[in-house]
Length: 143
Image (tube, rainbow, N blue to C red):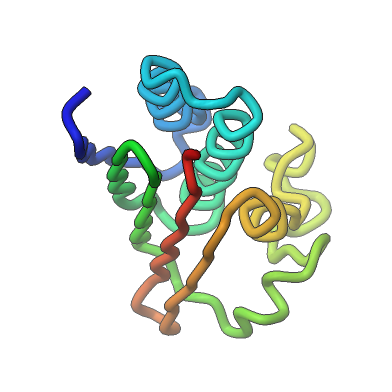
């Protein structure tokens, strides 16, 4: 792998069958670099939760990944409605998915995505505007 690898992934809305494709690709790239398994696990979980949030809440979007020998950087820009209260959305268990939603019936949409992402990353930023979507950026040190 070259010193820096950049990849872009389109996440389609409501495409639950493809959920995990981005995180699996990034996991493969990190494994090829012989990154520690615990770091790979955290990176895979953070990217997967990002994918799910985009599929469930945000009408899809774009995930850009940059990998260097030292750092994984993820920037995810969605097409969603934005988040009214980002601080509240960070709370474990907070969700806008209704309890009787088909999404919840499948065991997802339970409000743990952002808290999992934050626990697995070394830095996390969120920018959101109602009606304009949300961008999250996070980094994970690879060594």
